[in-house]
Image (cartoon, rainbow, N blue to C red; front, side, top):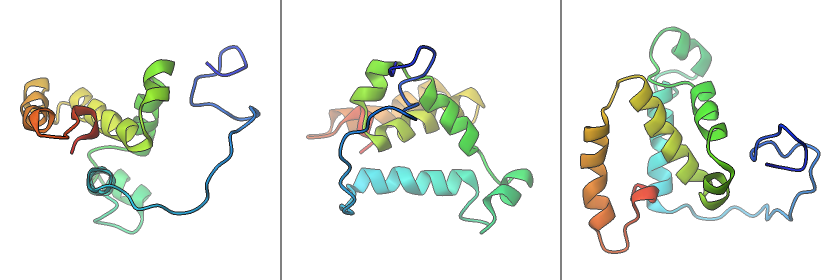
Length: 125
């Protein structure tokens, strides 16, 4: 939790912030893949108007669903996960919740990545 009772770890409005490096940095391959998944699953790739695409049923997930999944992370998980690890967790949560994928399908997809040298199950490499 942040400094105010009832605020989630993600809600930092009004709290002192650490220094932020505004320089762009190269994203790792798996981070670009997570970003691409968000674009494809949200329908943004099919329509420049994401809201219209979502209303038309072109999206398998919506930003509010992703936000809810990320906000539901415990403070420890939220603090330990990187930005794209949170996104990856949220995407999986939404797709599981809506029945698009099953836990068995997700587990099968994660096994080779977890066993790969230098691979991280959380990173979705």
